[in-house]
Length: 259
Length: 242
Image 1 (tube, rainbow over the protein chains, first blue to last red):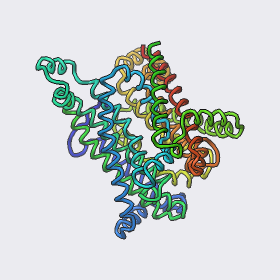
Image 2: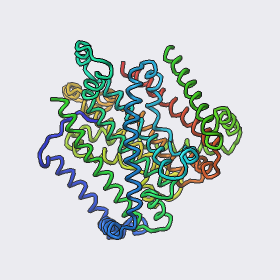
Image 3: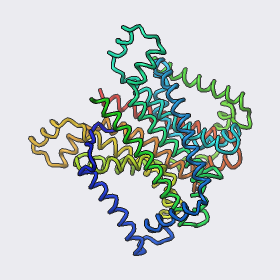
Image 4: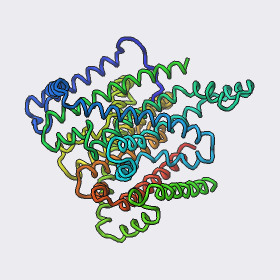
């Protein structure tokens, strides 16, 4: 999203301040909870959240939910990436279609995809497939947009080179287009994973009977604050770790592009 | 004019796909375009439906105003100070990509059921993209603008109003487009989960009853509203960018 270059090295000046800000924020919440300014019925202290998280991980009572949620996220992200790339490729090759579709793509995210859940339930049956379908619906558009963006930015000279070598269309796609657009495509992969997480957790939360999202909603409805905050923390940690890892790869690819 | 023709063609194509899907999956799963149109017309004649629309509209405009004010404010502050921007950017992006539904119980525990929880949820979705776009716009602003304002000895307020804001307006518009969509999404999800009024509640209710026609009718209404608003903002953006 930004054009600034991240300096490499163990820890930058800004990185240290950032760490300080985050640690300070957690310490503030911890203090407020300990002093009962934030009552335990609203929020439990971060240290207690971590303790509760360790306890539920050790007991293994949510292992099934964790496995089903991560499985759904992985499936949804994989399907979105493949589908989105193919759709983006087709739309890019057909400018008339693109002109018509683009305003739709831009306002796509205002439509809460979750409302189509009953349709998916009847088509796919109750269970994981309906959840995956909703997550794909949410994630695929990010991949389409990224693919269009990536194909747009392939330097004209590469196309000329392909023409000089008289490459066939599939050859050009495989040997020229794909590598040249790779960094932008990876940004699409990153976004697809983030949206797949959002789609799966939100569907489980609102509509399903299994998975981490459902476990949180269940804990909320039964006033089990400890379990609820532990699970919320678990999801935040999982998402941050995955997004952070993808972000590092993304930055590397972008930096290579600029060399 | 050519663009207009294409849009018509696209709408016709979408209707054809919808009809084909309806014929494949059957009427228990999907309402046909015609049935949906009839349902929408019927909803339009129901006074209680307009009550739900007004409720959602109220929460949405409230949330959008807060997202814009907060997002632009935070974006300007972080954009002006380079260090604070570099510190905050990864945090903002991390916040942007977490599933915010996860935090919904916290919002409910803090704000209770009702309008304020919905508004908060809308702001949670919409504020961050606007802040990120604004911050990047200021960072990528040509340095000569600020130098000029220094030479002219403008006060910080004058600099903000006459130099910075006009310069970043196009990017802020892009952020607003995204923020607009996401704020609407946030408000609707808020209503779906914990509300007795609004379009989101209407949808949850219809999901419970298996009333596919109402779901499709509300979906079409929302989609038309979202796409139209987005096209209007895009037109503003193009006018500013010339």
